[in-house]
Image 1 (spheres, rainbow, N blue to C red):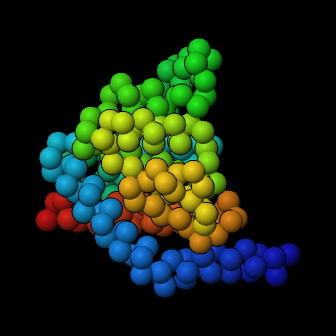
Image 2 (image 1 turned 180 degrees about the horizontal axis):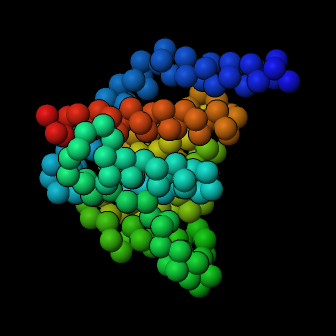
Amino acid sequence: MIDHIKQIISASISAKQKILADEGMLATTQEVVRVIVDAFKTGHRVYFAGNGGSAADAQHLAAEFSGRFYTDRMALPAEALHCNTSYLTAVANDYSYDEVYARLIRGIAHPGDVLVGLSTSGNSGNIVHAFEAARQKKVITIGFTGASGGKMKSLSDYLFAIPSTDTPRIQEAHILMGHIVCELVEKEFFK
C-alpha cells in the first residue's frame, strides 16, 4: 500500500510539474489575475460554477474572494451559483439540470462580469450551457478543465486545461491554480 500511496503523490506532483513547465498556462494565469482585478475595480462580479467535487471547489474559491485569502480586507463580490438549493432543485426539476447555471447567468450577470466554470471533463452540460449564456451576455469565461478542455475549450476566454486525464489529479491542480489566482488578485487589488 505504501508504494501505491507514493504513486498517487507522484502523479499529483507530475501534473503540477507539467503546469510549472507550461509557459502558456503561466501566462494565462497572469492574464486571468489581470482580468479579475479589472472586473473588481470596475464594479463587476465573479461567479463560480461546478458539479460534485468541482462545485465544492467553486464554492471554496468564491469564498477566498468574498471572505479573505491572506489579508484582512473588504469582501470582494464573488459567489458560487449552486448555493441556493431551492433555486437549484426547482430549476433542475422544472427545466433541466443543464439549465441551472445558464438561467442564473441570463438573469443576474452583466457584461464585464466573470464566470469561472470547473469541469474535469470540460463537457458538463450545465457548465457548457452557462458558458454559452455568458457569451450572449458578454460575460468573460474562465474554464478549469482536464487535458482536452472538452466542449468548454471553445467557449472559454481563458482556459486552465490541466495536463491530466485523472479526475482527482485534475481537481487538485484546479485548487492549486485557483489559489494562485486568488492570492495574486488579492495582492494586486489591495496594493
